[in-house]
Image 1 (cartoon, rainbow, N blue to C red):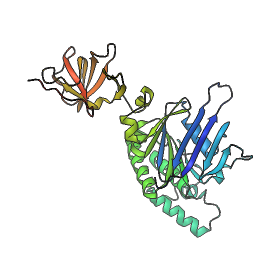
Image 2 (cartoon, one colour; image 1 turned 90 degrees about the vertical axis):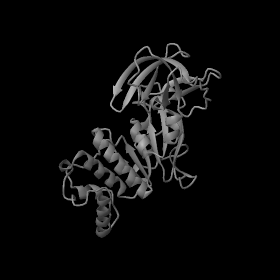
Image 3 (tube, one colour; image 1 turned 45 degrees about the horizontal axis):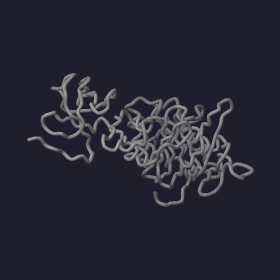
Length: 337
């Protein structure tokens, strides 16, 4: 982040829908700073898309305020909201929302009003080269692949040089291989431009691969914010932990503190080597290519089980005793003689 003044701010924002007693967005305070890519992540119905639509001006808050560069654009004492077209935002939707009846070139030029013909043509050419669609100006959207259509949607959103880019599940309809490739391409483009962006996704890989900061939302409320590494390694609770894949609930036997540990951080220690970690019994062992998925039951937490990803577990079998320690844990090792 290049400055401390937020580009976009939500202040105690509330959004309710008729017929639903629970607010879709409930008192959210959140800032998006210039130059950062903030990923909003949560399960379906958590309120993340509602927040994006509120920022875009496609919906209005029932309470609270929305500011862009410290200017009030919705809510509060404002008598008339700033309309979407006046907020200097770019939008990329899940399906691209392209105009099917006009060419690639005209799709990108659509938002470039008020520019002369030469300037508009130069900007279109620049944006198409940026997303790798140079030479395809005269094609129609149906003549492009799924990845190319989404890159065209990005070019169209970037063409007017928006202050803030809003991306709503932009990769969800793509197959895994194409999703990964396009995600990397878009990340590189946004970083190269220094473009501020708000990304809505339910996919943890999207958030971890693209975002400089992550905000987790549940039932319309903000649960945790932080860098991708922070929210992955130090989740606040089970909901936050599970947004990024499997996690094990580990209770410190001395303090009672609960932490959430990732399966790949598990270390298997045979009983006769050290007194490190917690005593466990193997429940299941499953080979998964380069790793083994080993589920164990900890003696210290009856009724619970931990999932461990181990590289060398060919000799383990259900019923085997052992110990599990976690990488990064501050425990001292007491080696047996």
